[in-house]
Length: 178
Image: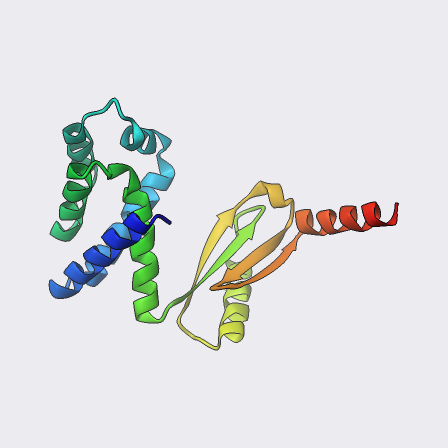
């Protein structure tokens, strides 16, 4: 996360608190993050130095027409400051700040395949037990390179039970004994 993204996110959070729209802006930021994560073309458009600032702003405002005024102001400010390319990072920072303010613990679970609802419930129960908090949400990241198993991150704690990690450990053990 860039410092600039965190500063913009904090500013939006303060503005949203003043206008009593914090939950609305949180929803907007989730939509922004999902849209940018799902569209490589949009991310490329925002990073392109060939596309004019006004065109980036116009495209973003058309894509996010159903968002709050706070979110539209953020898009306008980012475009005017030629920082439209960090919109996804700002949204991610805002979500993290919102969760922190609400006391929500976010567990990041990396798996080789999408978590089933049954597995998600088991992971959720384990995270609640580990953190001692009932206010927990799960973010599932699919990464086929871990082959199998999972990697669980909650705050600064990490538990790596991936097959790739176990194979790496075996490889190190074999290379030591040779």
